[in-house]
Image (cartoon, rainbow, N blue to C red; front, side):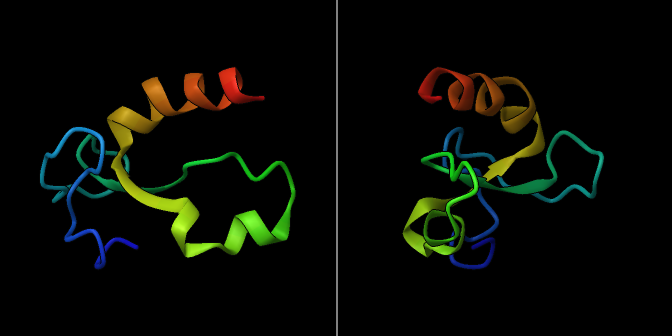
Length: 67
């Protein structure tokens, strides 16, 4: 996913060059929370590259709202 998405956060557009735990490190995010469903977990269309900063702040909130 990271290579497919050109090491760019799909939500903010920033280039992700950091290493964990840097805010600009890449994280693979499930667009639709998988909730244990293996089909959703492995579905490449359900995955996107985001920054750790976006994932930790907005991604978690988004997952809870969809839950």
